[in-house]
Amino acid sequence: MKFLLTILIICSLYHALGQQSRITVSKNSVKVADPIEIKLSIVLPSQSKLKISDKWDTLPVMFKNISGKRILAEDKFEITSWTKKSNTINDSIEWIVLAKAILWDSGTFIFPAFSYKVDSNFFQTDSLIFNCELEAKIEGKDLYEIRESFIDVDAAEKQAQEESNKIFYIIVLVVVFVVFLIIYLLIRKVRKRNQGDSKMEMSLSDRALIAVNELEKLQLWKLERHKDHFVELSFILRSYFSSHFQLNLLEKTSEETLLLLRQKNVSIEQINSIEIILKHADMVKFAKASLEENYILDLDNQARNCIKNTEGK
Image (cartoon, rainbow, N blue to C red; front, side, top):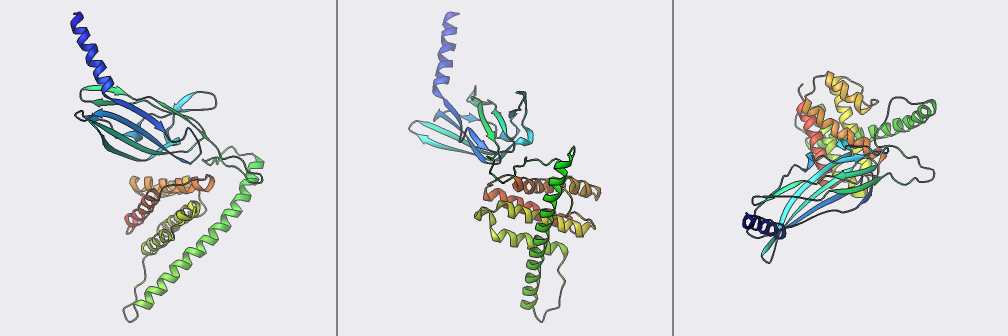
């Protein structure tokens, strides 16, 4: 019996020493809406086989609120991308898993330990703890929470909201003018190029798709104008659905917009895509977000698909 126990202990030590893992985060303290990078490094003998889940977006990340209670982070923590690669080091292989994430609320986040399999043995990583803080207050500039609140507002907050709405309406009018000016110039250019051909009126969806394409060509995110990009993208979608369904969505909140579209029997898949786009438009209005180009282009494509899938309904 002692001999068997000795063998088991030796085998366990062999597997434990034969693999090394380390999980780190790029920054332990970040601002709301700033991206972070979580890196997992596992060094194995070259003959070993690694099996690890790619479902990082389903990990139960915890959030510790002001009272110290731990709750699921849910929409406070978002994985934006996930990659896995390997490097050969002498007789070993280093597996590297990189996950990029964005934190949408201030507080303490706990990234959980999770298991992976090497050959027939299971191992577990360490957990990570990192803090997220609001932007430092700048004198003369108001700070806003990421999520808007439309209930239980006292008189002072209502007055401040009214002032904010006035500014929003002015911005909407300017954006309306710019968008329709772009559409008008594009239509005139097409008509001049196709002189002699039978004139065809552009459909509502075609005009909206052209507006999305022209907005994307501006590449505002490269000028650190993420907010302008998403405000205009949100406006194009709201304008299109307003005309298509005979609604007035330009003065509606995101929640009210989604509620009205559900009443028009818009599919759940489209509603989810529209909700993601409107959520990012709302977030970048009040947070200093800096999203990756591929992520922005993916949201633009989702907007195009929403327009195409609604055409003819």
